[in-house]
Length: 444
Image (cartoon, rainbow, N blue to C red):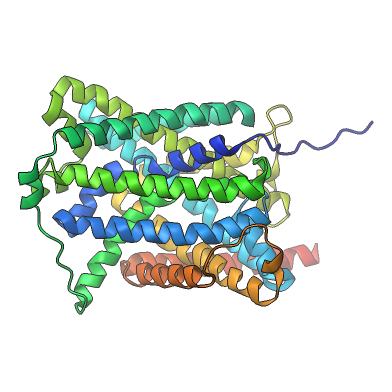
């Protein structure tokens, strides 16, 4: 009998899907962005950024839920965009998404590694830049080793990492509530938002970019669509549980900080949660706790690299991206070259960029090629009658879609000009590469 090509296998259930979403969402994000948000939106004002980010994640997850349940295949957005925009523009839109993913996904890996290195300095001071960068590279290498195994083993490992993440968050929140100081909380700057001020909206938009970064990952299950059991139920359910759970935890984390540290201390601390633990239980305990925060960062990058490797694989297997990424390890049934690219490029980016630049660039570059494109596409599928056949439909359609699009546009338009220009340049370069590729394909 002829040998069959190795394929991805449906081995991940609801618990694995939720765990992969949640560890992707949490990561090092809230631990490094919370002080950054408080710098621009002091005190209780910071809650506005977290609430707006949560609202956007909930609304956008409904779009992903409809598309993910209808088209449960490897690659998530790659498949959605290809199907939505048809033969004429489908390959272009899906290529542009994959093109930005090939650059943006390693940036996500780099951001997590840089944040990991930042918190690692609480344990081991690293005065020289190369020491911090070495930690980033070693972390990414370790993650590649952990992910270079079959999906069943990966699913089990994801649940272990997820339980660790939840335990750490519950420890912080529990300790924070126990030590909550009403005097400190009431002394924090109150929420004062001038709805008629252009500057106030700009500040809120730029702070929300950072909170959204912390919510990204609720759709990780869609990237793994071909490996999810009972996807019509498990994909929407896993996203709903993930977004609601993480939104509650983030709001509690911010409230705990407001009730334990002054705004000046919290906003200027590079490792604010280690500072909290030191205040509560002393330096020795804080150092042990910092190791747990590093566990969270490692867990998130584990889920990120797993999910994005499937996006590159899907486009490559479809003949719409670099062929090398379609290679599946015959024994482990994983896209080995796509995973290797994320590790190599992520390590390279971690050597080149700063954390604040990476965080904003990650969100802005994806708004046009992914989030807005999918929302517009879902409305189009409803208009042409395709959506009637979907197994999952959001309530109050199209209101959630239109509201999410409005917020995405708000975040994009209030971002720094250099990030907007970078996103536009990446799209333009992608269009040129796509048509150059298509022309070569026709001639050869």
